[in-house]
Image (cartoon, rainbow, N blue to C red):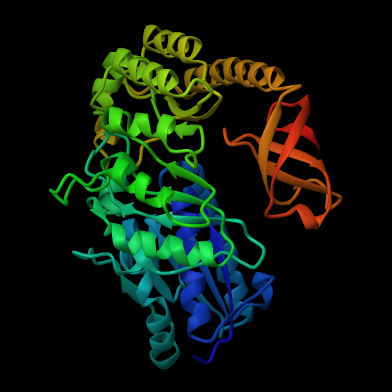
Length: 439
Protein backbone atom coordinates (compact mmCIF):
# COMPACT_ATOMS: atom_id res chain seq x y z
CA UNK A 1 0.00 0.00 0.00
CA UNK A 2 1.55 3.30 -1.10
CA UNK A 3 -0.17 5.47 1.51
CA UNK A 4 1.36 5.09 4.95
CA UNK A 5 -0.74 7.12 7.38
CA UNK A 6 -4.42 7.19 8.28
CA UNK A 7 -6.91 9.11 10.41
CA UNK A 8 -10.41 7.91 11.38
CA UNK A 9 -13.25 10.18 12.49
CA UNK A 10 -15.95 8.42 14.52
CA UNK A 11 -19.56 9.46 15.04
CA UNK A 12 -22.17 7.65 17.13
CA UNK A 13 -22.26 4.86 19.67
CA UNK A 14 -19.79 2.44 21.25
CA UNK A 15 -20.44 0.01 18.40
CA UNK A 16 -19.09 2.64 15.99
CA UNK A 17 -16.12 3.33 18.24
CA UNK A 18 -15.21 -0.35 18.13
CA UNK A 19 -15.79 -0.49 14.36
CA UNK A 20 -13.24 2.32 14.04
CA UNK A 21 -10.81 0.37 16.23
CA UNK A 22 -11.22 -2.57 13.85
CA UNK A 23 -10.64 -0.37 10.80
CA UNK A 24 -7.47 0.94 12.43
CA UNK A 25 -6.27 -2.60 13.17
CA UNK A 26 -6.78 -3.60 9.54
CA UNK A 27 -4.91 -0.56 8.24
CA UNK A 28 -2.01 -1.12 10.66
CA UNK A 29 -1.81 -4.76 9.56
CA UNK A 30 -1.54 -3.56 5.95
CA UNK A 31 1.44 -1.32 6.72
CA UNK A 32 -0.16 2.00 7.68
CA UNK A 33 0.39 4.01 10.83
CA UNK A 34 -2.13 6.27 12.57
CA UNK A 35 -1.67 10.00 12.06
CA UNK A 36 -2.04 12.38 14.99
CA UNK A 37 -3.66 15.00 12.74
CA UNK A 38 -5.98 14.49 9.73
CA UNK A 39 -4.04 17.17 7.83
CA UNK A 40 -0.97 14.90 7.98
CA UNK A 41 -2.79 11.73 6.90
CA UNK A 42 -2.74 10.03 3.49
CA UNK A 43 -6.06 8.26 4.19
CA UNK A 44 -9.02 9.76 6.05
CA UNK A 45 -12.08 7.66 6.86
CA UNK A 46 -15.29 9.07 8.30
CA UNK A 47 -17.16 6.39 10.26
CA UNK A 48 -20.73 7.65 10.29
CA UNK A 49 -23.93 7.18 12.27
CA UNK A 50 -27.49 7.86 11.10
CA UNK A 51 -29.37 6.99 14.29
CA UNK A 52 -29.63 10.67 15.22
CA UNK A 53 -30.03 13.59 12.85
CA UNK A 54 -27.27 15.59 14.56
CA UNK A 55 -24.59 12.95 13.88
CA UNK A 56 -25.79 12.79 10.26
CA UNK A 57 -25.39 16.57 9.88
CA UNK A 58 -21.96 16.62 11.50
CA UNK A 59 -20.68 13.87 9.19
CA UNK A 60 -21.89 15.72 6.08
CA UNK A 61 -20.26 18.94 7.29
CA UNK A 62 -16.98 17.13 7.89
CA UNK A 63 -17.06 15.52 4.44
CA UNK A 64 -17.45 18.99 2.95
CA UNK A 65 -14.26 20.11 4.73
CA UNK A 66 -12.41 16.99 3.57
CA UNK A 67 -13.49 17.70 0.00
CA UNK A 68 -11.72 21.05 0.25
CA UNK A 69 -8.64 19.34 1.73
CA UNK A 70 -8.60 16.95 -1.23
CA UNK A 71 -8.62 19.84 -3.69
CA UNK A 72 -5.35 20.99 -2.12
CA UNK A 73 -3.97 17.43 -1.94
CA UNK A 74 -5.40 15.26 -4.77
CA UNK A 75 -3.49 12.20 -3.51
CA UNK A 76 -5.50 12.19 -0.28
CA UNK A 77 -7.85 9.18 -0.10
CA UNK A 78 -11.18 9.96 1.55
CA UNK A 79 -13.57 7.20 2.59
CA UNK A 80 -16.92 7.06 4.33
CA UNK A 81 -18.04 4.02 6.33
CA UNK A 82 -20.80 3.09 8.76
CA UNK A 83 -24.55 3.57 8.65
CA UNK A 84 -24.70 6.60 6.35
CA UNK A 85 -22.48 4.79 3.87
CA UNK A 86 -24.81 1.81 4.00
CA UNK A 87 -27.86 4.04 3.62
CA UNK A 88 -26.72 6.14 0.66
CA UNK A 89 -24.32 3.78 -1.16
CA UNK A 90 -23.50 4.95 -4.67
CA UNK A 91 -25.62 8.06 -4.15
CA UNK A 92 -23.02 9.15 -1.60
CA UNK A 93 -20.24 9.01 -4.20
CA UNK A 94 -22.38 11.08 -6.60
CA UNK A 95 -23.31 13.67 -3.95
CA UNK A 96 -19.76 14.14 -2.57
CA UNK A 97 -17.26 14.70 -5.40
CA UNK A 98 -13.80 13.50 -4.46
CA UNK A 99 -15.04 10.64 -2.28
CA UNK A 100 -12.94 7.53 -2.96
CA UNK A 101 -14.55 4.83 -0.81
CA UNK A 102 -18.07 4.07 0.40
CA UNK A 103 -17.95 1.08 2.75
CA UNK A 104 -21.13 -0.42 4.22
CA UNK A 105 -21.55 -1.96 7.66
CA UNK A 106 -20.88 -5.55 6.54
CA UNK A 107 -17.70 -4.73 4.59
CA UNK A 108 -15.16 -3.21 6.96
CA UNK A 109 -12.83 -6.13 6.24
CA UNK A 110 -12.49 -4.93 2.62
CA UNK A 111 -11.10 -1.47 3.41
CA UNK A 112 -7.37 -2.22 2.80
CA UNK A 113 -8.19 -4.01 -0.47
CA UNK A 114 -10.44 -1.16 -1.63
CA UNK A 115 -7.76 1.43 -0.84
CA UNK A 116 -5.22 -0.52 -2.89
CA UNK A 117 -7.69 -0.69 -5.82
CA UNK A 118 -8.38 3.06 -5.62
CA UNK A 119 -4.66 3.73 -5.87
CA UNK A 120 -4.58 1.68 -9.05
CA UNK A 121 -7.79 2.67 -10.82
CA UNK A 122 -8.48 6.12 -9.36
CA UNK A 123 -12.26 5.66 -9.56
CA UNK A 124 -14.48 5.73 -6.45
CA UNK A 125 -15.42 2.30 -5.08
CA UNK A 126 -18.69 1.40 -3.34
CA UNK A 127 -19.38 -1.80 -1.39
CA UNK A 128 -22.62 -2.01 0.61
CA UNK A 129 -23.64 -5.65 0.16
CA UNK A 130 -25.16 -7.46 3.12
CA UNK A 131 -23.45 -10.77 3.88
CA UNK A 132 -24.69 -14.00 5.43
CA UNK A 133 -21.71 -13.77 7.78
CA UNK A 134 -20.22 -10.42 8.79
CA UNK A 135 -16.50 -11.07 8.41
CA UNK A 136 -15.52 -7.94 10.30
CA UNK A 137 -17.41 -8.84 13.47
CA UNK A 138 -14.43 -10.71 14.93
CA UNK A 139 -11.50 -8.55 13.79
CA UNK A 140 -9.09 -8.44 16.70
CA UNK A 141 -8.54 -4.79 17.56
CA UNK A 142 -6.86 -4.35 20.95
CA UNK A 143 -6.90 -0.77 22.23
CA UNK A 144 -3.71 1.27 22.45
CA UNK A 145 -0.89 0.74 24.90
CA UNK A 146 -1.88 1.50 28.47
CA UNK A 147 -5.58 0.81 27.98
CA UNK A 148 -7.27 -1.17 30.72
CA UNK A 149 -10.70 -1.69 29.12
CA UNK A 150 -11.80 -2.91 25.70
CA UNK A 151 -14.91 -3.48 23.59
CA UNK A 152 -15.82 -6.94 22.29
CA UNK A 153 -18.59 -7.37 19.72
CA UNK A 154 -20.79 -10.36 20.54
CA UNK A 155 -23.51 -9.78 17.92
CA UNK A 156 -24.52 -7.40 15.18
CA UNK A 157 -27.82 -6.32 13.69
CA UNK A 158 -31.35 -6.25 15.01
CA UNK A 159 -34.64 -8.05 14.32
CA UNK A 160 -36.94 -5.70 16.25
CA UNK A 161 -37.82 -3.04 13.63
CA UNK A 162 -38.77 -0.28 16.05
CA UNK A 163 -40.75 2.28 14.06
CA UNK A 164 -38.18 5.09 14.50
CA UNK A 165 -34.99 3.06 14.06
CA UNK A 166 -32.82 2.46 10.99
CA UNK A 167 -30.58 -0.22 12.53
CA UNK A 168 -32.22 -3.33 10.97
CA UNK A 169 -32.01 -1.68 7.56
CA UNK A 170 -28.41 -0.51 7.89
CA UNK A 171 -26.83 -3.13 10.16
CA UNK A 172 -28.87 -6.08 8.92
CA UNK A 173 -30.56 -8.86 10.84
CA UNK A 174 -29.20 -10.29 14.07
CA UNK A 175 -26.02 -12.35 13.87
CA UNK A 176 -24.47 -13.80 17.03
CA UNK A 177 -20.78 -14.68 17.20
CA UNK A 178 -19.81 -18.15 18.31
CA UNK A 179 -19.07 -18.13 22.05
CA UNK A 180 -15.72 -19.87 21.60
CA UNK A 181 -14.55 -17.03 19.30
CA UNK A 182 -15.69 -14.39 21.80
CA UNK A 183 -13.95 -16.14 24.70
CA UNK A 184 -10.75 -16.56 22.67
CA UNK A 185 -10.72 -12.82 21.89
CA UNK A 186 -11.32 -11.89 25.53
CA UNK A 187 -8.54 -14.24 26.61
CA UNK A 188 -6.13 -12.52 24.21
CA UNK A 189 -7.18 -9.10 25.52
CA UNK A 190 -6.69 -10.22 29.12
CA UNK A 191 -3.24 -11.46 28.17
CA UNK A 192 -2.43 -7.91 27.03
CA UNK A 193 -3.43 -6.41 30.38
CA UNK A 194 -7.09 -5.63 29.70
CA UNK A 195 -9.02 -6.07 32.95
CA UNK A 196 -12.45 -4.76 31.87
CA UNK A 197 -14.45 -5.82 28.80
CA UNK A 198 -17.68 -4.34 27.47
CA UNK A 199 -19.75 -6.77 25.40
CA UNK A 200 -21.38 -4.98 22.47
CA UNK A 201 -24.47 -5.61 20.37
CA UNK A 202 -27.55 -3.78 19.15
CA UNK A 203 -29.57 -6.10 21.40
CA UNK A 204 -27.31 -8.26 23.53
CA UNK A 205 -30.28 -9.71 25.42
CA UNK A 206 -31.25 -11.76 22.37
CA UNK A 207 -27.72 -13.11 21.89
CA UNK A 208 -27.71 -16.77 20.88
CA UNK A 209 -31.36 -16.90 19.77
CA UNK A 210 -30.32 -18.37 16.42
CA UNK A 211 -28.19 -21.12 17.97
CA UNK A 212 -31.21 -23.16 19.00
CA UNK A 213 -29.31 -24.99 21.72
CA UNK A 214 -30.26 -22.99 24.82
CA UNK A 215 -26.98 -21.08 24.96
CA UNK A 216 -28.05 -17.49 25.65
CA UNK A 217 -26.60 -14.22 26.88
CA UNK A 218 -26.71 -15.33 30.51
CA UNK A 219 -24.63 -18.38 29.50
CA UNK A 220 -22.11 -16.13 27.76
CA UNK A 221 -21.82 -13.81 30.77
CA UNK A 222 -21.00 -16.77 33.02
CA UNK A 223 -18.38 -18.05 30.60
CA UNK A 224 -16.76 -14.61 30.22
CA UNK A 225 -16.56 -14.39 34.02
CA UNK A 226 -14.41 -17.51 33.90
CA UNK A 227 -11.72 -15.93 31.71
CA UNK A 228 -8.59 -15.41 33.80
CA UNK A 229 -7.61 -11.77 34.22
CA UNK A 230 -11.06 -10.25 33.58
CA UNK A 231 -11.97 -8.22 36.67
CA UNK A 232 -14.97 -6.35 35.29
CA UNK A 233 -17.68 -7.13 32.73
CA UNK A 234 -20.10 -4.61 31.24
CA UNK A 235 -22.52 -4.83 28.32
CA UNK A 236 -24.66 -2.68 26.08
CA UNK A 237 -27.31 -2.37 24.74
CA UNK A 238 -30.28 -4.23 26.22
CA UNK A 239 -33.80 -4.38 24.82
CA UNK A 240 -36.34 -4.48 27.69
CA UNK A 241 -38.60 -7.06 26.05
CA UNK A 242 -35.70 -9.56 25.96
CA UNK A 243 -34.40 -8.96 29.49
CA UNK A 244 -34.96 -12.37 31.05
CA UNK A 245 -34.83 -13.34 34.70
CA UNK A 246 -31.77 -15.46 33.83
CA UNK A 247 -29.94 -12.30 32.77
CA UNK A 248 -31.19 -10.31 35.78
CA UNK A 249 -29.97 -13.08 38.10
CA UNK A 250 -26.45 -12.68 36.72
CA UNK A 251 -26.13 -9.36 38.55
CA UNK A 252 -26.59 -11.19 41.84
CA UNK A 253 -24.44 -14.21 41.02
CA UNK A 254 -21.48 -13.03 38.90
CA UNK A 255 -18.96 -11.07 40.96
CA UNK A 256 -17.18 -9.52 37.99
CA UNK A 257 -20.39 -8.25 36.35
CA UNK A 258 -20.59 -4.53 37.11
CA UNK A 259 -23.76 -3.22 38.74
CA UNK A 260 -24.97 -1.15 35.79
CA UNK A 261 -27.44 -1.72 32.97
CA UNK A 262 -28.42 0.57 30.11
CA UNK A 263 -32.08 -0.28 29.44
CA UNK A 264 -33.69 2.09 26.90
CA UNK A 265 -37.38 2.70 27.68
CA UNK A 266 -37.96 5.41 24.99
CA UNK A 267 -41.36 6.46 26.40
CA UNK A 268 -43.59 6.01 29.43
CA UNK A 269 -46.80 5.99 27.39
CA UNK A 270 -48.27 2.66 26.33
CA UNK A 271 -49.84 4.17 23.22
CA UNK A 272 -46.50 5.64 22.14
CA UNK A 273 -44.66 2.40 22.94
CA UNK A 274 -47.18 0.54 20.76
CA UNK A 275 -46.72 3.01 17.90
CA UNK A 276 -42.95 2.62 18.31
CA UNK A 277 -43.31 -1.20 18.08
CA UNK A 278 -41.31 -1.66 21.27
CA UNK A 279 -43.01 -4.88 22.36
CA UNK A 280 -43.68 -4.01 26.02
CA UNK A 281 -45.86 -1.75 28.15
CA UNK A 282 -44.65 0.78 30.70
CA UNK A 283 -45.77 -1.41 33.63
CA UNK A 284 -43.75 -4.33 32.25
CA UNK A 285 -40.67 -2.14 32.01
CA UNK A 286 -41.08 -0.97 35.62
CA UNK A 287 -41.55 -4.57 36.75
CA UNK A 288 -38.26 -5.56 35.10
CA UNK A 289 -36.41 -2.69 36.76
CA UNK A 290 -37.89 -3.71 40.10
CA UNK A 291 -36.69 -7.28 39.51
CA UNK A 292 -33.18 -6.03 38.73
CA UNK A 293 -33.16 -4.03 41.97
CA UNK A 294 -34.41 -7.04 43.93
CA UNK A 295 -31.53 -9.07 42.52
CA UNK A 296 -28.97 -6.30 43.03
CA UNK A 297 -30.01 -3.48 45.35
CA UNK A 298 -27.31 -1.01 44.25
CA UNK A 299 -27.63 -1.52 40.50
CA UNK A 300 -27.39 1.65 38.41
CA UNK A 301 -30.03 1.92 35.67
CA UNK A 302 -29.61 4.32 32.74
CA UNK A 303 -31.91 4.73 29.77
CA UNK A 304 -32.86 6.46 26.50
CA UNK A 305 -36.01 8.54 25.96
CA UNK A 306 -37.36 10.11 22.78
CA UNK A 307 -39.72 13.06 23.14
CA UNK A 308 -42.12 14.24 20.46
CA UNK A 309 -42.67 10.93 18.68
CA UNK A 310 -45.47 11.35 16.08
CA UNK A 311 -48.82 11.43 17.86
CA UNK A 312 -47.33 11.99 21.34
CA UNK A 313 -49.88 14.02 23.32
CA UNK A 314 -49.29 16.07 26.44
CA UNK A 315 -50.80 13.21 28.47
CA UNK A 316 -48.43 10.74 26.82
CA UNK A 317 -45.53 12.97 27.84
CA UNK A 318 -46.88 13.14 31.42
CA UNK A 319 -46.79 9.32 31.50
CA UNK A 320 -43.11 9.52 30.60
CA UNK A 321 -42.44 12.04 33.38
CA UNK A 322 -44.27 9.82 35.88
CA UNK A 323 -42.25 6.78 34.80
CA UNK A 324 -39.04 8.75 35.32
CA UNK A 325 -40.18 9.79 38.81
CA UNK A 326 -41.04 6.16 39.60
CA UNK A 327 -37.87 4.54 38.22
CA UNK A 328 -35.40 7.35 39.05
CA UNK A 329 -32.74 6.63 36.46
CA UNK A 330 -29.10 7.20 37.34
CA UNK A 331 -28.56 8.82 33.96
CA UNK A 332 -30.44 9.41 30.74
CA UNK A 333 -29.77 10.00 27.05
CA UNK A 334 -32.71 12.04 25.78
CA UNK A 335 -33.52 13.23 22.27
CA UNK A 336 -36.09 15.09 20.23
CA UNK A 337 -37.67 12.78 17.66
CA UNK A 338 -36.51 13.30 14.06
CA UNK A 339 -37.62 11.37 10.98
CA UNK A 340 -35.03 8.88 9.77
CA UNK A 341 -35.37 7.94 6.08
CA UNK A 342 -36.76 4.48 5.47
CA UNK A 343 -38.35 3.97 8.88
CA UNK A 344 -42.05 3.39 9.46
CA UNK A 345 -42.37 6.46 11.70
CA UNK A 346 -41.12 8.75 8.92
CA UNK A 347 -44.49 8.16 7.23
CA UNK A 348 -46.58 8.72 10.35
CA UNK A 349 -48.92 11.72 10.43
CA UNK A 350 -49.55 13.86 13.53
CA UNK A 351 -46.01 15.19 13.79
CA UNK A 352 -45.29 17.11 16.97
CA UNK A 353 -44.28 20.75 16.54
CA UNK A 354 -40.58 21.41 17.07
CA UNK A 355 -41.33 24.07 19.71
CA UNK A 356 -43.31 21.52 21.73
CA UNK A 357 -40.53 18.94 21.39
CA UNK A 358 -37.97 21.43 22.67
CA UNK A 359 -40.13 22.37 25.66
CA UNK A 360 -40.73 18.72 26.56
CA UNK A 361 -37.07 17.83 26.24
CA UNK A 362 -36.07 20.76 28.43
CA UNK A 363 -38.52 19.76 31.18
CA UNK A 364 -37.45 16.13 31.02
CA UNK A 365 -33.76 17.00 31.22
CA UNK A 366 -34.30 19.32 34.20
CA UNK A 367 -36.04 16.50 36.04
CA UNK A 368 -33.30 14.00 35.22
CA UNK A 369 -30.51 16.42 36.17
CA UNK A 370 -32.09 16.79 39.60
CA UNK A 371 -32.37 13.01 40.08
CA UNK A 372 -28.81 12.39 38.87
CA UNK A 373 -27.37 15.05 41.17
CA UNK A 374 -29.33 13.64 44.13
CA UNK A 375 -27.91 10.17 43.47
CA UNK A 376 -24.40 11.55 43.16
CA UNK A 377 -24.74 13.51 46.41
CA UNK A 378 -25.93 10.35 48.17
CA UNK A 379 -22.58 8.74 47.28
CA UNK A 380 -20.55 11.35 49.18
CA UNK A 381 -18.77 9.70 52.10
CA UNK A 382 -18.89 6.21 50.63
CA UNK A 383 -15.83 4.22 49.57
CA UNK A 384 -16.00 2.90 46.00
CA UNK A 385 -13.82 0.52 43.99
CA UNK A 386 -12.46 2.56 41.08
CA UNK A 387 -10.68 1.10 38.07
CA UNK A 388 -8.26 3.89 37.10
CA UNK A 389 -8.50 4.25 33.32
CA UNK A 390 -6.18 7.18 32.66
CA UNK A 391 -5.76 10.89 33.13
CA UNK A 392 -8.71 13.16 33.85
CA UNK A 393 -10.14 14.97 30.84
CA UNK A 394 -9.63 18.27 32.61
CA UNK A 395 -6.07 17.92 33.89
CA UNK A 396 -3.00 15.75 33.41
CA UNK A 397 -2.37 16.33 37.12
CA UNK A 398 -5.38 14.15 37.94
CA UNK A 399 -6.44 10.60 37.18
CA UNK A 400 -9.88 9.27 36.42
CA UNK A 401 -11.85 6.04 36.55
CA UNK A 402 -15.32 4.65 37.00
CA UNK A 403 -17.23 3.05 39.83
CA UNK A 404 -18.72 -0.38 39.23
CA UNK A 405 -22.01 1.48 38.74
CA UNK A 406 -20.43 3.41 35.83
CA UNK A 407 -20.00 6.80 37.47
CA UNK A 408 -16.92 8.87 36.59
CA UNK A 409 -14.62 9.73 39.48
CA UNK A 410 -11.70 12.19 39.27
CA UNK A 411 -8.96 12.29 41.90
CA UNK A 412 -5.39 13.34 42.53
CA UNK A 413 -2.82 10.77 41.50
CA UNK A 414 -0.08 9.90 39.08
CA UNK A 415 0.29 7.47 36.17
CA UNK A 416 1.46 4.68 38.49
CA UNK A 417 -2.19 4.15 39.46
CA UNK A 418 -3.47 3.66 35.88
CA UNK A 419 -4.77 0.12 35.39
CA UNK A 420 -5.21 -0.52 39.11
CA UNK A 421 -8.47 -1.00 40.99
CA UNK A 422 -8.29 1.12 44.14
CA UNK A 423 -10.57 2.15 47.02
CA UNK A 424 -11.60 5.80 46.74
CA UNK A 425 -13.60 7.87 49.21
CA UNK A 426 -16.15 10.08 47.44
CA UNK A 427 -15.78 13.67 48.66
CA UNK A 428 -17.74 15.85 46.21
CA UNK A 429 -20.64 15.37 43.83
CA UNK A 430 -21.25 17.12 40.52
CA UNK A 431 -23.87 16.58 37.84
CA UNK A 432 -21.64 14.61 35.48
CA UNK A 433 -18.97 13.22 37.79
CA UNK A 434 -17.74 12.62 41.32
CA UNK A 435 -14.55 13.69 43.06
CA UNK A 436 -12.71 11.38 45.41
CA UNK A 437 -9.54 10.67 47.32
CA UNK A 438 -7.46 7.50 47.48
CA UNK A 439 -8.03 5.63 50.72
